[in-house]
Length: 224
Ligand SMILES: O=c1ccn([C@@H]2O[C@H](COP(=O)(O)O)[C@@H](O)[C@H]2O)c(=O)[nH]1
Image (tube, rainbow, N blue to C red; front, top):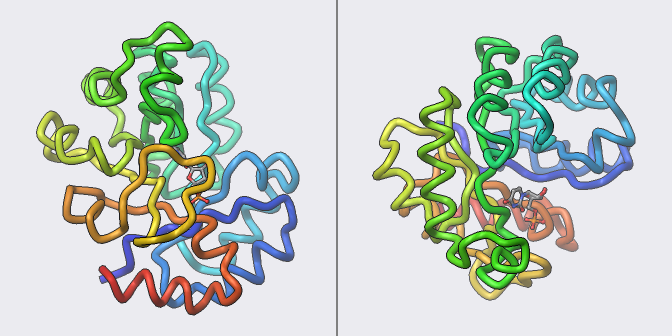
């Protein structure tokens, strides 16, 4: 069975992304490319990374009016990513258009509440100050809109799975015990996040920022 770990290659440097991916490829299940990589390297960069042979998670977190998001996804269709993200807070119509525009084999998942946010952050933008409630609300909305799953933290995944037993749950904010937290506020260890119901785990800096990324990926894999 392939690893549930997707390594987040958050760099604008194509050669660095390729080098890390080549080093860790036997200990991860896929590659996650986000805005930093995509704005620097575009679709050709994604194709170069896909040539390494691992599934591609294109984490662009699209968030705009339904027509714009749908057209943006149409422009990405040829890349056939395994997973693609939109913000669930963009609303039901936006998510419906996103799913309709995506290739059949692409899982479209809705970002609920970013793992870098806590209750105070939510209150400061006028949302209910409980990440848990907001994640549940957006999980239900994503399900109703026909998406494939959601992104949430390990703290909410068990409850979200109760709402959506067949959903695909992406959990970032994953930190091996004792690791550096950085800008992440809602975190969990890889083992606990899987036990709580994550379908896949997203791990960036604990692997890419390690002195030996290969060993860091092995160490995480050994805990799963
Ligand atoms: O809520 C979210 C959604 C996406 N992410 C992305 O995951 C990785 C996490 O990187 P780390 O270095 O392991 O913190 C990063 O690419 C984010 O854009 C997230 O962290 N939280």
